[in-house]
Image 1 (spheres, helix red, strand yellow):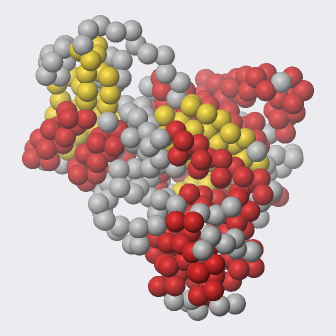
Image 2 (cartoon, one colour):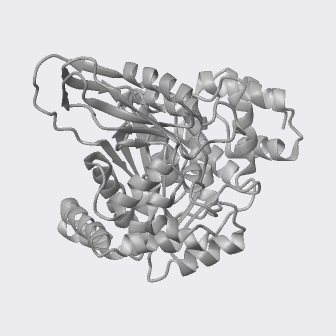
Image 3 (cartoon, one colour):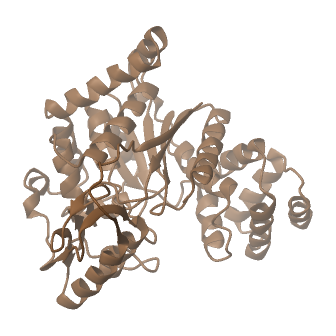
Amino acid sequence: MNVVDLITKKRDGGEHSADELEFLMEGIVQGTVPEYQIAAWAMAVYFRGMTAAESTALTLAMAGSGETLDLRELAGSGKLIVDKHSSGGVGDKTTLTVGPIVAACGLPVGKMSGRGLSFSGGTIDKLEGIPGWSADLSTAQFRRQLREVGLVVAAQTATLAPADQKLYALRDVTGTVPSLPLIAGSIMSKKLAAGADAIVLDVKCGRGAFMESLAEARGLAELMVSIGKGAGRRVTALVTAMDQPLGRAVGNNLEVREAIDTLQGGGPPDFQQLTQEVASEMLLLGDPALHGEQEAAGDEAGREAAKRSVQEAIDSGAAFDRFVQFVAAQGGDAAAVVSPERLARAPVTVEVEATRDGVVSGVDARAVGLAVVALGGGRQRKGDEIDHRVGIVLTSKVGDSVTTGDRLCTVHAADEDAAGLAAERVLKAYSFSEGMQERPERSIVLDRITS
């Protein structure tokens, strides 16, 4: 095949075959296709798009470009290995709660996670705030922990979907990141290569997400579900709200503490709701008993049964116990989980106060996320070190009535100067309306798309 022919084919709106996409992905990994040609092809895809069949073939080609894990024998009793993925948001620590809950319900959760990018936090960054915890696991360690603990969260290895890693690096510097087929292929190729049989996708929508509009988020969700179905996987996508930060804590150690509180029956209502929804979907996809109940008695009956299992895992303490076991298995200090006050804290805290009376009508999640990045809680460039101690804890969120001088949030910072700058930024993230208004009834789940 000729690479130039493939570039011009896509440039002119043609449709690639599976063989052509395999040829391109092999060329990326082996270095036989120059980076400038791959970049030109990615730009053609950005402008011309891909059909659902092309997107599926691209994903399978990327997943098959390196090592693939087969974990089915570890599930047992006809259950499936289940995974979840979030498209990225501010204050999103959902993996830290749903993983232990679902594992405590008897369903193995094997997950490859990433680090934060821009205003969006990363699961591995949060967990690395626990002293000793490591995401660097061999395939043998991954399999053993999944069998013994039922829960593992690891970093993507260089041998897992290497075509995706190389292609993403080029997209990042060529302005082709916001391409739905390439985004969907990147996410799903890692999930397929990591051995997931069932996948729950949490596609964020709003100012604190990469997909700001509902139409964009729904389009990405539908494409990823289509790819999963084409690859023979069971997939459900939830489109969830991310206009304001999820929960109250934004920042690595602060979010770990909030996740622990939620696993023990506390936590903010919106985060409780999302945890319940995602964990229930994972059980419905991966547990044949619950899936059978759903088919026999109807969708809502099966969903209610899943939610009861989730709540029982929390109420009994089984979910929190599983989180402790998981942390210890990956070298983390379990005592810091049992007593989260032992997690490192920022030396400076500053309260941000309301400068007027009113009702909070908005909290710009992206602005809050960028303020935490500026504090050192995220990366402005790939490879930056992060400060796990810093962050922001929201006291007031959308619908809360405040008067002048009431606390809106608390900034946790490494020094006074950083705290002052962050306080100014986060105050601008708040918007208010006049008068006393009834708190709006808000559902965190905006849409549900299934295969």
